Length: 138
Image (tube, rainbow, N blue to C red):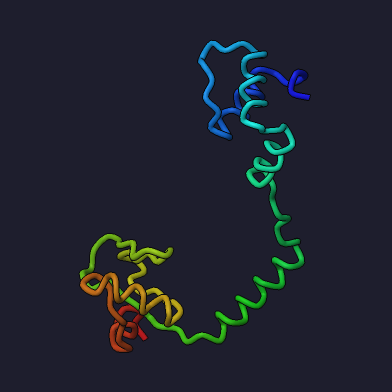
């Protein structure tokens, strides 16, 4: 069975099972080394099968259901309004939250706001009602 394999295949088998062969070994020398190590081509296929096996991903319907569940969950979550501490041209706080001079306030989920405030305490803070009213002229 090994004799109908290419030298490249045989060298791959040797590499996978740590069988030492010389760099310039002939095909017959490689086959002898493999047989001496008592390795079969089936053993090689079984060991490499896990490298190339994959599980089918979720179907479109399953993804839609999960997205819908996440959307419902996020709608339930309380929101927090954040603003930049130092007014400047713009600031990126991570997780897709961007502030700029024209829109210094960003409404985010409370859990995300807590993460941002923990990381960026000197740059971002919760906005007050008075700041929002003053900025938007309410």
